[in-house]
Length: 161
Length: 380
Image: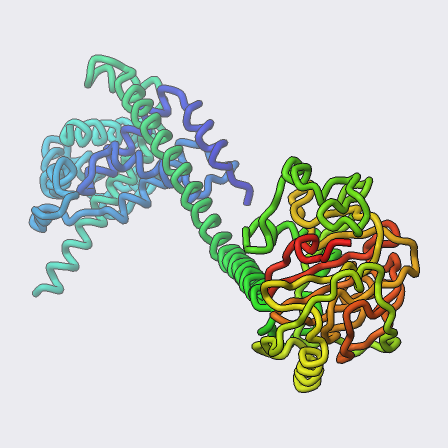
């Protein structure tokens, strides 16, 4: 499998568009909310692993998708216990990320008490359902589903801000 | 109960992670312009996240570069240490070897010169002369040590000594003997402890020209040598005793006088010569085959040509600790152990060894100290 060299990876990162950079920050925020770390820590760790060669970057994988996958992997390593399992105060990781991690599943679900469909979709997402499956589950068209999904993302983003 | 809580925690953690994955997918599927608009809506500047990303990327790249440098330095350092671990023992071994060689050489040199100080107590050696005449470098080195026989005179000092002047008269005028050329050979004479047995003709008594001129009385009881000079010590001692007893005609410590071994032109006087060398005797130019006479009664303690540069060499031990040397001879007419009488023909002059012309190199030593032969040679 052909992979980018470290120099090529650095060059590719520098060449990202503002939209790609914005997307990466947003993805980092989404994953970091589940960890004890901030979104910049998560994104920086992902880039470090790429530049150091710890994570090989296949040439045929777009930068956005690749970096999102790296951050997902790291976030899983860094996952913090949800609320009720308070992080150790002595843990240096406790801090900004700790507050973010305090977001509880219940709180997220409660965000959509005013929109039972969106709430249903959120619960389905937590269960691992995706795309067409959720669309079918809620009886939505593709456009309606995408609209609900964006609504959900925006509310959660604002919650973690 | 604890297990139930753990399972619940894990389940909820996984649920949050799956939710983040779903949000991430949504972000990836959202057009960039929409995302930028959302940022503008939230923060008032659509490039806020891009700026944050740029700042973070720059920081990360710097750290990565620094880390690369540190890694390179670490690897280089490890390589250097590895190389040092390989080469250090080798270099240390070579160094120790060199130090050993140098130390050993200095030790041998210091112990090599030591016997020169004690002509009568030379340990058994292989060379009748401690310092071969051909070894100029060693001679120079020895001269620089300022040992009694090693002091040097400048050419001007030579000029101040009449007996060393190039145009000095023949040996018949001992104090003024000189040649028309500069020093041709420089020697240091030391009797070895084990002279080689050399075949040679027996002595033939024929008084030298100057021998009959001033025969001197020998002390009634010549001082015996403190130690045997040569290997064959018993024989040498016996011979020396005989020589001392029989050769009591010439000298005591106060009136000691040697006769000139031959008549000729002195081409090199005693003492320092140019080039930081010194001549421990005198060189007398004579035709090849000229008779060489014993300077005084004595015992032949060495007859041979084992010393490089001296050619055929005779060493004769006399009373009162004197030794005379006769070098560059073409033939030796006596052998080790022979007793000789003053004026006896003991050799024929020649050009053996390091000699540029037929000549006799003649030395007189008092103990270990070479003395100026012209001061001990009887006039006439």
